[in-house]
Image (cartoon, rainbow, N blue to C red):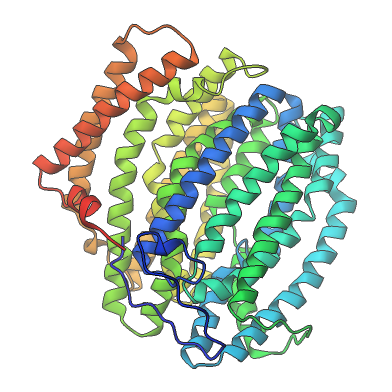
Length: 537
């Protein structure tokens, strides 16, 4: 990842208390992070969140299984997600960070707070009105988007959708207020909120499922997002001196700039987001298909979130700082260095995921989630894992554009690629079935990632030849060798079926995989093992 950058601690607000020095200083709420310590913190958060996410998947599988009811619950997230994506560009803080960095560099903290207040107030009104309209028209959306649902399942999906819609308002509030923290390079609140969100869903299911059934999950979502992304982030922003103002000024320069940066994100469609919408449309024709794909994607997203999303979220403020300081050579080097490390690690991890897909997914079998569900899900999971490095890299490339103040180019490219990809999803679904959808997902993200890399190269922002191709080849060789050995373990070890046997098999194969990865990388002269041992925040 990027080398540590000097923390920007300038502020005109009342200074906060200096955290105590120590090994766990990076966990202190007031700590301003380097690129590496921020990535470390968010990777730790992603790891813990992934564990909670897997616990959530296990309980949902056990309690509700892969059937029409769970399909309706998973599908109910789509209209709320679309609403947030097209109205506020998905992540409000992406656009605000660039603007607030400039206020902070000028020493105008009060102006930055005013900008946050104006954006927050205006978009709460817009998003609130949109949520009311979505509540009214949810049945129509469900009927056409999930054409394969039965009338009863469509009605259930509509009810759950209406319950989940208000959550987007709290996500947006957390995103806007969180930009205050990101500019100050404070990531601890961003690290904790996903844990609260996941814990809310789990507790809602455990405590309320006997009374409310599948609705308990939606109740848990609402509680989790109110307490985590909204309330905790608001507390953190207030602690850092945010002064909220109840004003609406649609002509304020900060709001018009935020709108200019956000409109491409609102009207453009990235395949990284649209992939799940396209998958669910076709999967609705296969009872339980949405649920099995969701489980496969959740298991896939657990490691992807650790190495990809965490690094991407941590990188944006630092990329933005380098670009705003006109250090374009350092900016290009930082992006290529991040891509190289992320891609290399993802290749190794993908080899592990593909080889151990059957025992990994089998751990989530039980109750209403039977062996057939587990076998099919493992098949989808292995196919998704092939594209792990691409999914992780596209997030870095997209943030390089955002840091440069260019949201239009990736949005336009993403929209074109999405439109081109839909017929491919359709063709492969009708010819290969559900497996075809997983293959189409991989092909789509390959096109999307390659396009972003080429566009950055052609604009002379991040040259492709700046990647460390020798390092990537070493990682690919290590991944292939470790994959072959781990696959042999899965096929040859005479273990009986069962969760205890699955865990033992995963432990043995993982040990061999790790040893061969490390040995191969060291023998070929890779810098990755040395960096793992020597990097300190």
